Image (cartoon, rainbow, N blue to C red; front, side):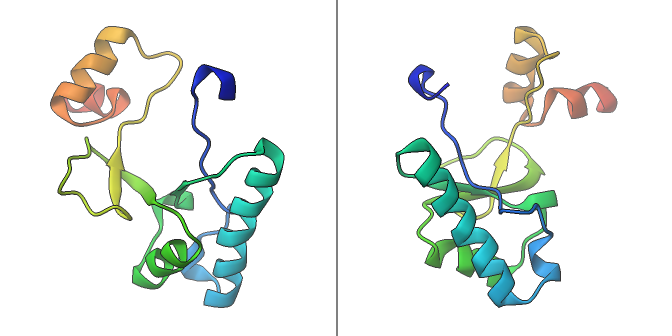
Length: 119
């Protein structure tokens, strides 16, 4: 997948809801997941996804300190240049989504599965 241009991002070591644990534990989860992936992949890991989309300012700061360039929660939407780098929205893509539903989701600014529920 790496050879095909897929980028891998970190997501913690144990998929814990970061705001629910002590900040020291959160920092270990965040930095440790990056180190684990970099060791496995043999390349830098620059992005992070907050488990369950759960994040607060202390967690954003911990992700920044760990050296990530950007992070995503679970808010659906299309990023723009003005979006904060550590609170980016995203479009969820599933293997069952058609190219058309993906294109419509990008145009509407929300995930295909959420688009279908709202129409």
